[in-house]
Image (cartoon, rainbow, N blue to C red; front, side, top):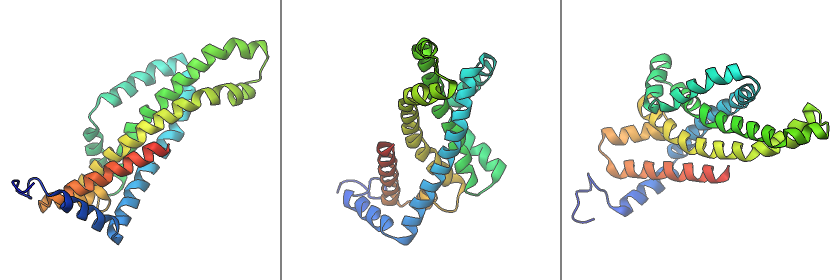
Length: 212
């Protein structure tokens, strides 16, 4: 590392020092907490609505034909597009981060749940009829256990994706959070801090993805 300009490629221990200083400072802990809170608000809203949409998709062919292409379009759009739109709509506030997370994770969560319900009904539909299970018992003993792995898989992907979206949105539109401090490091050309904040974001995202 001695042969590189630290303004381009910082020293390893400089990055680690920046991580330690940020994580154990009041502003750093608050930034991590706020970023995490925004991520889980966005994912929570997407999860609640996503379950409802998944059920509707499994119940109605018409809704499925309308909604699935829309979700495909959402997933095809670059995430920065939703961030820019949210900034135009809501200004320089924490809301664009939450909205961008919500829009990008809604398909990630709802589509696997829909396919889980579809597979469960296809695989166990006849068994439920033979044993004359009520709709309530079918949902409780068949659908929910079958869909659980799809829910966990969707949430795991959504959590990792949400931190990337949320921090990017904070970079452009917020006055706090990891992305906000990353923007200040960028404007001041503090490369060790940029690498440090990136490392912190990767670690937090990985930890929460593993906990799901």
